[in-house]
Image 1: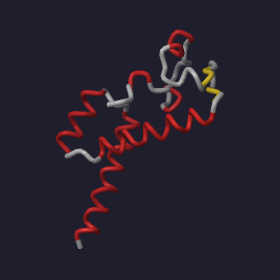
Image 2 (image 1 turned 120 degrees about the horizontal axis):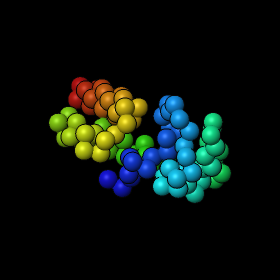
Image 3 (image 1 turned 120 degrees about the vertical axis):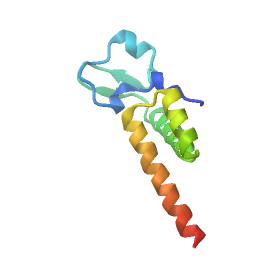
Image 4 (image 1 turned 90 degrees about the horizontal axis):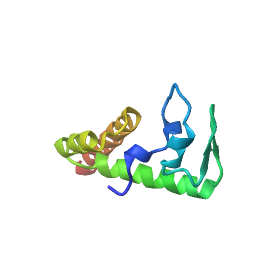
Length: 103
């Protein structure tokens, strides 16, 4: 995997506590997000959207795996529940598309 889920911007997920400066320094988004106690500012929208595209592509890649390999990848990478749900939606969409093409 080219992306590390442990450094994924926590603003993507519901959090009860703000991102600390120490946490922010280790995040993949540190160069294009400014984390504040209650919100996150996007300081470079091009880099932000490029990172989002890369992340979505990685989720699609995982969704395309056979179900046992997909489950293993999700477990091994400790994918967040929000992203796990998205992977499930992508996998279902791929199954529907494959069924339509098979007709």
